[in-house]
View 1: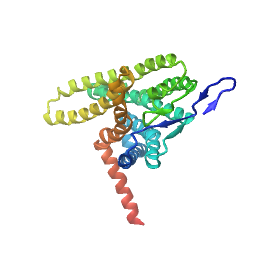
View 2 (view 1 turned 120 degrees about the vertical axis):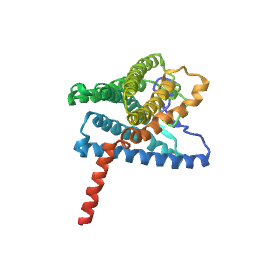
View 3 (view 1 turned 45 degrees about the vertical axis):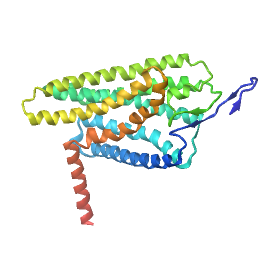
Length: 318
């Protein structure tokens, strides 16, 4: 805590992340669970990035966007889970004010970027399935690069504005954040400053970052499903539906939980469930994305097989 000169007011300089409670037996189980999730998530996403970069056959708009998503998920998971794991293992739940602001910034930046990237990926699949003859012209390298760059830039700009406003707030106590990360709502509740401006800005930017991408994604999948229904082959329809339903499930979980946490009214019932919903879009979707979007694809499996074969050949030659 620090005391401002000329004022009888003490300001908080560190917070306590309450996390998932104080039960020791639960802490170790959660540590093991999150450790496995973190290792699998990092390994899966890094593998996809490496395959997309290394294999020429994966240098297409779809896999370029998938590579961006996997790179994002690697950073996204590393922003949250290492701090959670350290807290569960050591019991130290304190985080400095600056550390809290930095974590919120990267968390918000990557989450906003993911919303746009998922929309861009669904639009890419819509063009590939609904307009296959014009796909190469409609989704060329320049447009694909613009979609990816626009997604990252949108996340950067919106989160930078919110974080700048948050950094100007004062916190007088209490300093306990009822969450496992420095999320917007639980942090803002602790401020003794006027938060009306930042709340208004957050509602506006959250609506821009979630609703339009979600509606675009939903519309794209509706068009994709209508196109799939016209496929004469039963096997072809089943295969397309299998992939489409998996993608749509991940997108629904991510957008659904984000909308519930950030855009619905702050009621007592939702407040108790927000921590659970946050686990879905911060922990489970980064784990599911490489499995659903990439590692089930025939092209990715083939690229992985080639790399393993080359490695085995080199090993035998030694």
